[in-house]
Length: 260
Image (cartoon, rainbow, N blue to C red; front, side, top):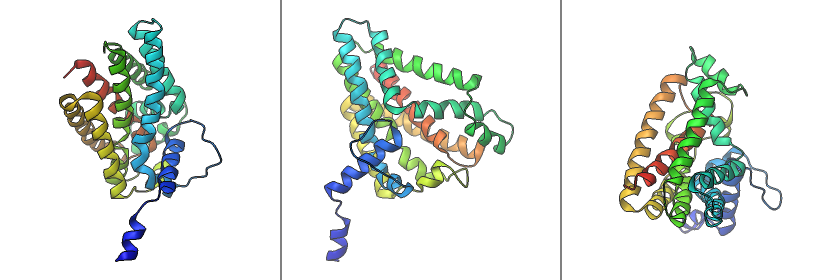
């Protein structure tokens, strides 16, 4: 029993390795040293995805705050903040949203999966990207206090990534190969920890009432996207995870803008 208890303790070095794996998986931020990660590393590090989101959020929030205190109006400042997040992530999640929007209009499951792997972006994908960028920038611009907007940005990036590990647990991969298969299934504890971190971030960043509203709407999005991707392609892919993150960001920012 003593040996089991000791092995369950995660060392600070392992925690740092998990955060590094989450950053390498979901961003394009340079890390000092050389890291090589495999699917098992990413699955174990599912809890750290909101932490990676916090780092992206801090970068975006800093750009927004600097733009506002420099005298820029809210809308262009919001656009710059979103652009900073795009640079930090390499547009990974936006690419997933566009691919899902294009592919789910296909006739067969095989054709939908083929469209997802096509690097070209179609009309639905372009419209989805435009809508995402517009809603996020406009919602951010509608928050009058630059400090509050910066805090909301950090919470949005954390909350939007907090349910990705659980989605990977509850929805099987749609393909026999690809990103989702390579990552595998995150441990239950890791997925639950990620959601707990996201819930805490939303409670702090948006306040209890707005945070609860955002969590409820994200749960509805989670259930709807799970049903939709099972019906459309029989499971989830990396693109579906990207779409889940994007919709989560939009929901959180809209709730904050509404001042619930």
